[in-house]
Length: 146
Image (cartoon, rainbow, N blue to C red; front, side, top):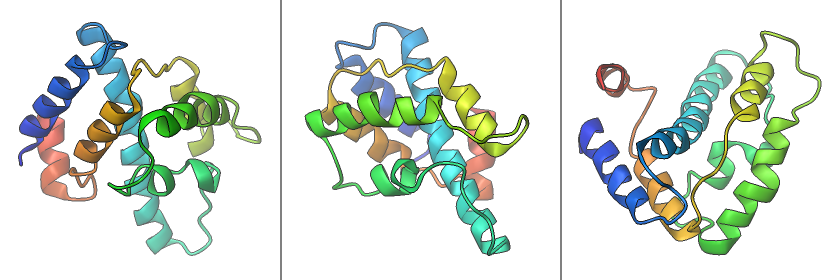
């Protein structure tokens, strides 16, 4: 499936969610989700290149540990995790120096908000995002075009 088709299907899923009203909210919702996926893909690359690399994101909140499994959290459990654990943890990352990767994460999440009200629909969106490999130069190139 092409990147454009994946994004189109994500938009179709989001249109079913009562919390996401209009393109601005859909884009904002998609930005923080794709940010975390790209960040995690980049970290996987950094871990291969530097055995001492340590993520600024606590283990529990890394994309690979809560979102990467297609059969993972969903429904109310996912919604509660994102709203009550993930967002507060990333908004309040401590011990981050200005310009660091942790600082970037905290800054992105300062003004981010989860608009989705259905954890089941959110899981469907996450699974679609997982179809994109941001370490693939072809996918990355197509996504830049998009």
